Image 1 (cartoon, rainbow, N blue to C red):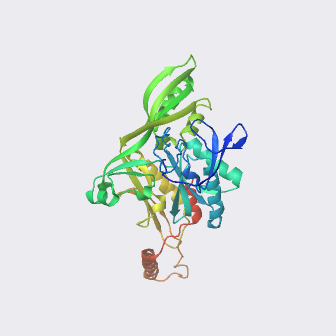
Image 2 (image 1 turned 90 degrees about the vertical axis):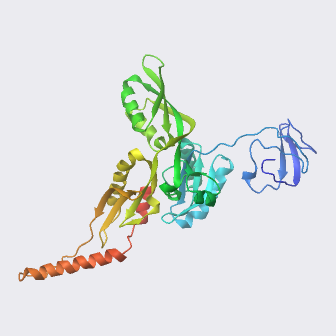
Image 3 (image 1 turned 60 degrees about the horizontal axis):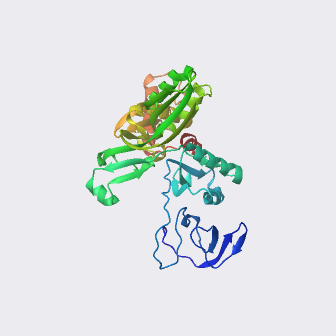
Length: 377
């Protein structure tokens, strides 16, 4: 009824508990229907099956669960694209909560953007890919879906709607086209020994958490409830929590809807040219800190080249952080031995002009391994 598709019935069996063939099956009975259903996505839990051209009322409706965490999955080598696709298709047969959309990256090639119910769900799925199918995928850092209210009427007409839901930073519209941003929140429950209370409160405040309640369970333990942005907990919140509490604190969370926020897109420029693969969405209060971390990491990972490389982290037209990778430099004055100093200055000037011209036309070569180390979780 939900999919509005029709199939020829090849056979009907009922479970008693063995399978026995029957002519008809009715509501309340547990059985099997054999039909030419080509795709498991057409079989929705809670759907109602009825005879074609017959009007019936749905027995019940299950609201499908919406994914909360998204991550890119790419093969380590494009020659392994087909085996990885087969492994993902087989796993999603018995895990319908995972959403799969084809994605591509100039750095990592063809892949998929998978949606999961939570961080644990994502970790279990990726472990099964490796253990059951021997796949070695590249998993990018997880991201969340933001809601964007558009301001530009021309863009609203082009998109066909005023509210967009995006999880890919590269697809975010320019700030002057956006009226409001909304980010997903979760209600987190933390149980911890009282001796670690101060450190854990500091962690939650650092992650933009708002305390909702605090209750003493007994003399040694306390239960706290915090409203936290989902983007702040999907990476390493639980790891830090366990580290601060020596493994004694526990954490779980549930969806708490969307809330108005102030986020920006952080772009990375190499010699003035933006690199879309490195852009990410961050809260405005942490933009400068994350910008400095990213440019420092890229400075370590990108090898030196024949031209100087300026690494800039920008928000809009404002540069928040910058690092420079010095160019390889030949000692053009090595063959000189004394003589007029103007000869030395002339050679150095010619070298500087040559480097400047080279920087205007040269393409920065970023190794594939650098993209993997920066993008993967």
